[in-house]
Image (cartoon, rainbow, N blue to C red):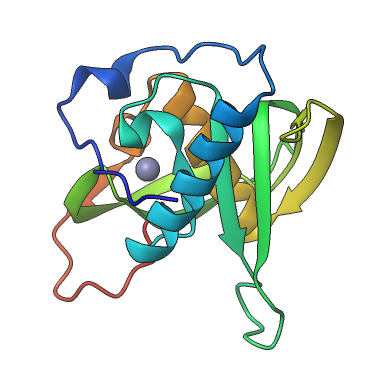
Length: 167
Ligand code: ZN
């Protein structure tokens, strides 16, 4: 495992539609391990492969519960993720991004999403997420489509202290 360097705005890899993963080989597993390690060290609660300069449709998310600290963190690894269902109701929340350091912004996101994709062996998986977890998935899936939260944010500012979980 290795910690990879984070790519930051305006690196063009963050603006590309990342490539579909077709080979579920040891190279993919190495990439996933590096992403998990890099996310934990950053620290962040989610990371998409373009954020370490790899234009592939791979995301990792590690999160417990927004209101209950006793809920242990769960790690999600999703290859070729897509949102197949989302609630019409949106919630506003404040996001920070490891690839856009120093600022945060307020973004409306669907409250509930269903994410479909594959695990590291290529097996189909489906995850239903709500609240912060749903927000993290939407943020990471934006990354593999070349979008940043700053494209969606109503306002962006520099926080007084860096206490946000970045994604
Ligand atoms: Zn981000």
